[in-house]
Image (cartoon, rainbow, N blue to C red; front, side, top):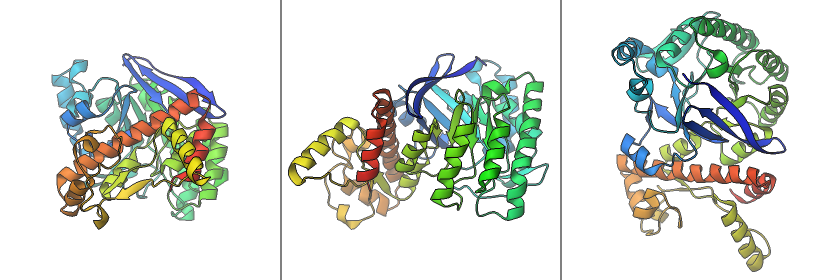
Length: 403
């Protein structure tokens, strides 16, 4: 594989823009991953993704390693039969689009649950049920799959787990990280180019500090702060994220998984995170909802001016609409007036209401197209606000005015 690099291109306080580069691929950060199941978008086909989603700023397809454990033999035979890069794992999973990276994690981004671990094995969910795997077996899987980036196997304990599990998760994860690095480097690969080290510790700040301090000593491509949004209070989560980011090396990529709202993503960007799971749009689609909050700073500034002229104070904007609501049964407007996605240019709220109520697959496709496009537009505006030194202004307005 070609060398992967990361550089910061703009910064306001701790919020930053950057570029993850490899060969002809350039991913602009901060960014959201594309959630997949076995490498495929949840509701979109390859032709729709290629035609209707923007690849200008690059895309990161997030895969769950456990989805592929039962077919590693098939993948290995595929690689032997098709040794050229053009027929790689990316091609096998239909993720060989230009300007895209594959990022392999060990969790399901929509249904993250705590599964039992021993000192030797982690447990994950595959299509055939629960599967146990050692760090060495995980690295063997990564060698077959060859993703551009992947997260080391870890014991991801959360606040709702027992005290005994919490005590062990940091040492266990560090032990597995070192075994993973040694195994990966031992097969001729380079952890510093591909592997993300996990920061664990559940909701215990001192354990998080210990984990962050130790993983910072390892030569890896980046870091992931796992095990959050798992029952801890917002104040505890805030303290953990702030302290951990003060410890992790500034020059490395930081990934924050979890089912975050746009406001929570803004808060994390303000702390210095670079990559986030794109699970918000997926959750909206799964629940028959569509994102409608303002996406661009230009639109926001215009709306503020109009509202101040008419009422003396800014208006509060909805973040989403529930298309199951009968209020939309006869609504001939698009989901969002002015939106340039395929769904909004071609279909009405009334039609989508019908599809959602009838549980038609087309409804999920059209909603997912809109929601992913909407989040793409929003994160692009976030990046622009950082480059223009207006991130604080953008984030403050958004927090105060979007429900």
